[in-house]
Length: 468
Image (cartoon, rainbow, N blue to C red; front, top):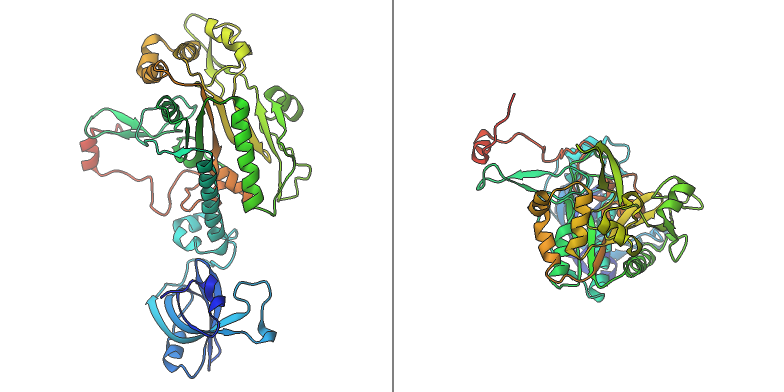
């Protein structure tokens, strides 16, 4: 039965079977030293002359070959013990080696951090890049963080609920990816920019507390902390105030950092709360970097930013000459109570403040949410202010208005940029380093060679033609 390398030190004096990769091979003629690696760690193995068949195989193997090794676990001599290193006090005496798969010479060195390797080459051969210790650590820690959050939210009576990926476009401020329908030629699905409407509909459905690690797709220009598809930790709660949502998320973040990243220090607890006006006047940013020492990679300066303007001018004019308005964050937000009358009367629009709250970390916006309009009349007014006529409101949002009219409770939520949070916690320069299969800065998947042209037959089935 296979033994993981991390558990080997518990089998001193016994025989074990280890499967993994040849990390390093050192042939010293009469004996061969092998560093073996699996997902849990590394161990040194030695093939002695008295095991002739194993020695013949050991002299043939090379780095990245996949092998199964039968070996005796021995204590290292006192002078050879490596203190503070996993398995630094033991080594394997190899009895037999079976080659499970040979490997071509790797396109690049995977024993380094990889920053020196051209990123496009790394992405094209991501299955090799994933073997390096840094990427293994990043992806494994991402799993641990996600599991920690799942367990904590489960204790808080949240349900993890998946929402559809094939939906209709929603106004999120970015372009949507469209998916043509074969059965309904000329019609398109949209990939979700966020689960915004679905999570509110779950509140209408009576689930009260929802979350998911949601895939979100936005057809926008990419940069270091963006990707065409990314992951949100999305949550929504019924019967809550702005303070309730902020308190729950702040406590979750503090617990997460304390337990999984003990080397990190949170600069201020509770997190400071700034209004949008204060943040812009004092720091010139709605995602200020409040770190006392920006050279300290383990210092985390969280802060909340609240009281955002609900609307902003688009810079365009309607036919009747009145200024056209759009939302600053989310059209489903609820104004602060003292501005509800202005919303309903559609007056003093530029002065209306919303219940939007963001949290920033070290100069990045990492999360944002709001209390929502839970009555159809208030939501309808938002779309009217944005210049939508009755027909468009019904076509695009009739389902939401009917759901709110069915007895939807007050509710609010938040979404974390999960990739961005991991980037900061792992001290990485961009979110691509925290993803198992990222795309390039131009949105290309070099491993799968996507996007790519579709076959003519597929285009005909979808009713799609291209103009020259």
